[in-house]
Length: 172
Image 1 (cartoon, helix red, strand yellow):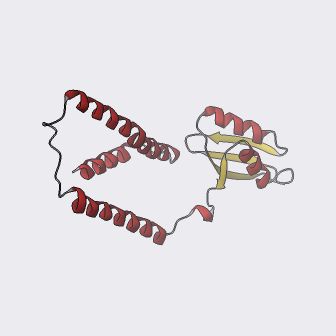
Image 2: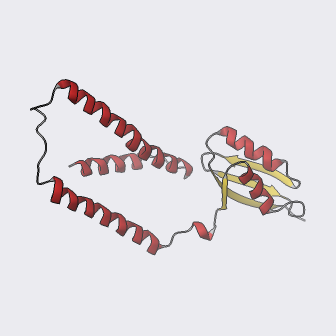
Image 3: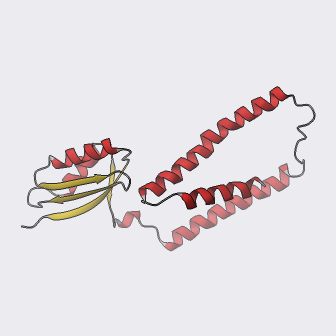
């Protein structure tokens, strides 16, 4: 009987140690001929003898090590065009709602005049606190889209440019 080949996505791989854990664990299964885990793409390629092991045993081994698995063409992972359009429409409505709130409540009062009633110490403390905001929120955004680009094996230059443009447009 000939070997079967499968490519699984294993979410949660972060380093080459993760690759080693998966390679070793799946490699111990009876019938596993070759295993190659790849961290940047979060994929695991396995050649195995279906008479000795099956896809479910491979998945169970990977998942018992703490990773989530799904097949590359898993229909549960697909999003239709209607779902994408609906998501974009909800996002656009959310942005319009924020703009409405800004113009209705905040825009009428105008921007504060920081030249009066503010000491240099207070400006320093405000700058320090807003720096925590940038690290905590913006840093998480950058990490998120950069990790997503890395898992799709593509550069993140366009994502950085789009994030910077979006942030610049939203601040004005």
